[in-house]
Image (cartoon, rainbow, N blue to C red; front, side, top):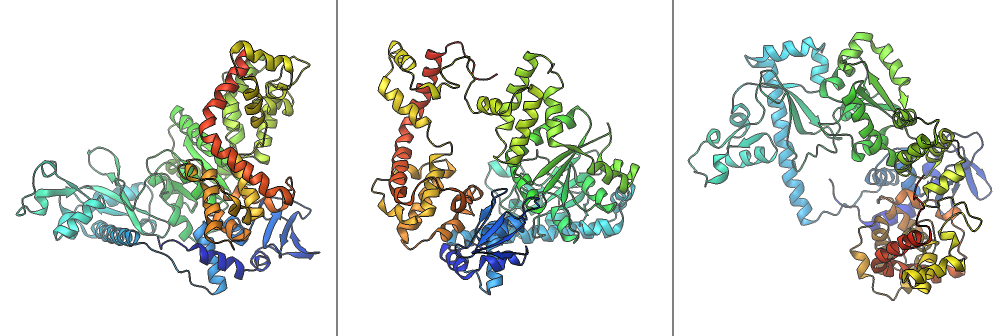
Length: 616
């Protein structure tokens, strides 16, 4: 990591950048009045709804809601991370980024550099052994038996860790310092007796440590820059386990790396999808068959980090699993982790192989074209989802439909707001035979009641008979009314609304007089971002909207703030400060009142409608 990018540089870069020039290099714009328009590059459309405002240095699509500043556009269009987007803009502007590196970061980077050097040295050692070691025949025979050529083996950097306890140790670990580096890199293991007693300085390296990998084919695991950060080893003897990965180290986190992603990018081919398989040999076997868009996790279930990395590269991910019970279970876990990331424009499919087959054997059996045909016709996420939920239900019965609704609710609510979420809700409504509006009400905590008074408990709060029922429960009538009305406020989080108001008029942050210390301990991403933006303005009263948006894009909530300048017109300009301060007051009081509100809401439901159910 090069270091932190100063906020002042980001602000200056945005002021130097013309968003029209940035976008016009990638999307052909047409001037129309004060704006520039085009068909949106983020969703399919025939009539242009994508608008770029040169005065505001802001883009917005009235069709899909995508919007932001120049940094945000590059992140979305180029599938780049925030630092990469800043680097691209800086390069176009002829500027060099003045990275800030703390003393601690400099020390960490130096130590990590030594680990990378040791891992690269180990990689060269293993590659030399597969060419020259006397015992290499078994390794070469195994790879040839799996259909690999020398060219593909060289491309993936395959090597060989020969039998013996100290081959790597004696080759690279020539002194105490290097041995400590090898230990920290996960390449050697400290012998148990040395962990419980003082080390004897006269002990040899072999007496203190031993090689982690022995008699195994070695698969180097590379990061996005092509640096070796870890290894996987496939045993050639009867030793267990069959596959062994490096432990986690300061330069390797198995839950975030994808095997084969670097090689896929290096191949130079332009892909619109990635195929996620289960093992090293699956990735390499598909590459051998000229299918260069396969990647694999490293012995862990697919998580949000893996998926985010893949979606930065392509809009479509294909999960490839065995068609057995274990494969179906793994596919469902992958689906659960995928739902929160299913933004509009992304697609996920599931390819289930015949029982007993894996991508390696299957592609060699049916050939490249047939395999790609199966990939293209794989089961869409929505089909797998509803097929799985309905397989043991009688959805022709009321009970079956109610059960399906309960099962589907918790999953569909994970999907980000957008067209895909609406389509999933439409699909469920069709299966249940109810209207989408009714289903949406139920999913958002508004049970449909057989009553002429109201369609929901919260909307019935003005009914005196209901409010008066609180006295028998010992409730505080006025307090209930006040708290419940607060619940009827913005459907979006208060912190997000406050951020939107602040982005429209940064100066209102200077009018805050209350102590914001309680918010510094907030775990909620919205509240943390709100405090950071307020402090930006306090530290520099000249901070403008686009500087703040540039900061927001480096956070998890960046993408949710882009509709503000074109769609958030509810609050008149003259009422911004008053509403902003009121929201700040509410957020501060919410820290201590949240549990009380939940209790009151629950009590209200129980006392007013004791026999009602919260879900269908």
